Length: 252
Image 1 (cartoon, rainbow, N blue to C red):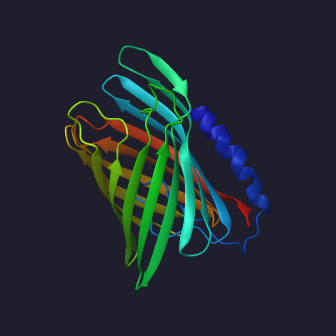
Image 2: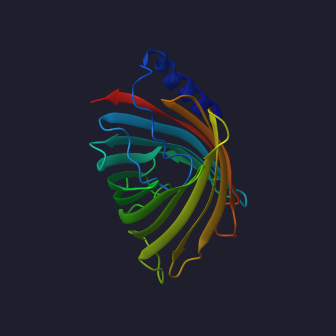
């Protein structure tokens, strides 16, 4: 999985030499769980692609998450996201491979001035993954975003609710989630991010994790990230590692 991700990163970064330096910079949504209120530059189609590995009490799950982001104007945009490939193995050694579920998000952003912005995301997730990898049911979610600059520190806070399509006996239909990420530049090319995130749903255990990541931007139109996440209770994967990149692939 790591070798595949590295090969894809190399392939996708090659065209950067042909990009104009005066073109708009990228707007990364990676590497945190929290979404920022900001949209990509209008008309700029951006690709986010990465590798994600999770380890939890003898089980493992590796995937290639992706997102295609397009801003129509400074207020409206869409995001198409999912997992291009999933490989998972349970504690008994049973392995499954295939595509993940696919989500389409409509996003609205409001600039509030003084380094503040608000956002609202409406997401529909289609069950494109086979049984065993995905839930087999559609989910619908709404996510509220508040972004703010505190000097050099940028915060993205999210509060969301998801209507779960697949649930077991006694499990609630509505899942709530909250997250807050804090990022800051280390120098003109490096940045650091820390985040707390968790979910809660009736009849199921809550989840909670802490994330730490570093981002490197050798060019305003390319950002590469790497980081780890640690589960804070037994219901959250013990460890997760991730790496990925953000770059533009077209302008309209």
